[in-house]
Length: 402
Image (cartoon, rainbow, N blue to C red):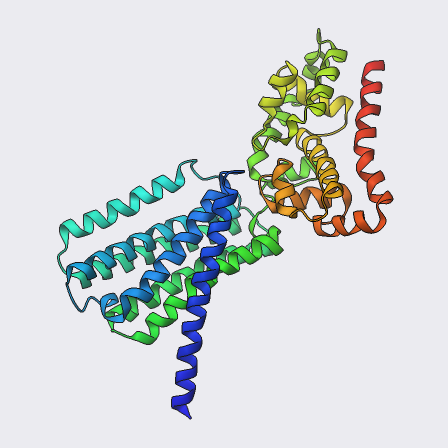
């Protein structure tokens, strides 16, 4: 009976391992394809593909190679490939978790992490001869990276006062540390069971991360803005737009400055340029910042920010997202079979979660529910979406009269 249970568990672990590899690879390829629309997807793709790659290599090289039992050239090559990708995956996972809790990464983070991984493996090969020693050092490096990620995430969680939902990010970092610890202990004691458990965790962990990002975006794609800005605006937006809000705060820093900020500006010309901005659908550009908008209109950051707040009673971010949701509505209406994530990306949102947040904010419905309502009740939702255009026209008339 015990033999049967043991055999069943072994087969089940193998199944989970292979299923994790396949699913992780498919998700990675999907994100790689979407990278053409937004570079952020390339970072996700790098994580998923690297995890599936080192998991597949672990399956190929087997237990003996993982414990450094031989020093054959082929085995050494496999070990270098395996641990090089593993270290890269740990570095990329840290980058992904940092982003999920609202911290920007270097634009060339993928290249930096790849260079660091290659440098580590090159240094180990130049200074160490035995495969087992290389394996142990690599496991320790991975454990160090994942443990640092966990501590860093926990510190940020308490320091920034994040909501409880972000415990998921801490849990993912902790599980990654446990996985690396099991792998290290498994190698030290040549324990195949520990290595098998360690092999089953990473791909499933990444899939769980992806599941959270898609179904519970608030747990991964945080609305990352500080409490101070939240209290002022009563709305939390992604950290990517903090600079935009900072510009707006600067623009309205003093009532005395506000009285003179639009002096000498032709408001009718400003409104006409804003209308042209809407007509040409410039708002569909993904990386559209307040600086870009002010340059298009031909006024300063302070002036355009003050104009939006004074005459349109709206922040720059809400103004852009309103237009994007209106465009998304039209695309859903025109093509019911189109993927909602694709629609969101086409409308300028940099992720499915930012699309979902904006959709809920301006329609009260998630994209999925909005799509159902459009085809179920057409008119009410249509009126809600069209009201955005009507508001723009009303605001234009009001500003012209003023």
